[in-house]
Length: 324
Image 1: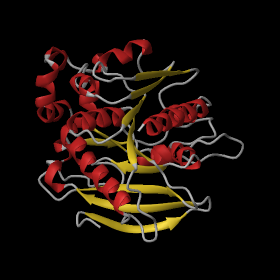
Image 2 (image 1 turned 120 degrees about the vertical axis):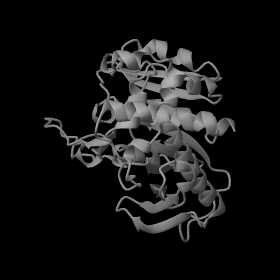
Image 3 (image 1 turned 45 degrees about the horizontal axis):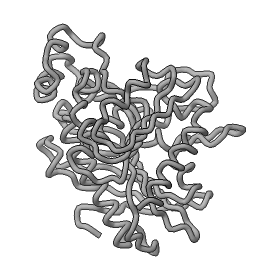
Image 4 (image 1 turned 180 degrees about the vertical axis):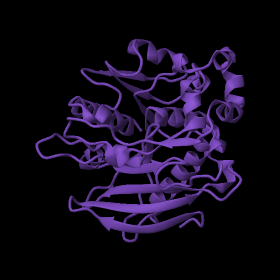
C-alpha cells in the first residue's frame, strides 16, 4: 500500500459488493496551504468477477459521491450507476472532490481552484489504479494488472474529469454527463463576461472573492413528488469552482486536448439547448459519441431514461476494453 493512500476499512453489501474506503493524501497538489486528502469509496464485485474496467466517478456541483450510488426505491428500475456497472462485472470508484463530502474542506475554501482539484483527482485515481493492479487495495482481493479506467463525471464533475484527463491522461476514455462548455453567461456580471476565458481562469480565486462573501453554500434537497431522492447526495456548492462552470469556454481548451474516446450524455431538457453542437469541441478525440436522453433534465439518474444511459455507457466502455 502506498504511504499516501490509507485504507479506512472495507465492508460487504448484502448484494455481493465489497466497499473499500480510502483517504488519499493530495497535499502536494491541492494548493490550499494546509494538509489535504480526498475521500474515495471503491466498489468491487465479489465472486468470480475480475473487473477489466474501473469507472472513476465525480459528482457535479452541490453533490457528493452518493450521486453515483443513489438508493433505488421499491418498484423502480436500478437508480445507482455504481450498482448498474457492478452488475455487469466492473469496478467503481466514487470520489468526493476537495471541499465536498468527506474530503478536506479548506479553512479558506476560496482557494479551491478547479485546476488544483483536477490534479488531486489525478493523484487519487492513480493511487487506486495502482492498488488494484498490485493487489493491495483490499485484503484477499486479487491483483488486476490489466484493469483500465473510464473517467466519469456529471455536470461540474464532467468538467473536472475533462480537466484532469487533459492535464494527466490516465483514462482509457471519458464519459461526461450533463455538461457543455457554453457556461451560463446570464449569471455573470458585465465585468466577468468581458474577460477572455484564459484570463478569467487564471484570476478565478480573485474573481470569486469579489463575487461573494461566502466560499460555499450548503444545499438541501427541495421537496419532490418523485420516489427517487437526491437528499443523500446533496452537499456544498463551492463558489470558486462554480464560477468556472459559469464562464463560457473556460474549459474548452481542455476538451480540445482530449485524445481518447468521449461519450457525452445530455438530457433533452438539460441546462443547455443544442445538444448536437456539443461534440464539436472535442476535436482531438478519435471517437465522440453523443447520447441525447429523452424526457430528461439535468440530474439524469432520477429519470426513466437512466436505464438506456446505463446500458449504453456499459456497452460503449466494454467495446473499448475489448479493442484493447
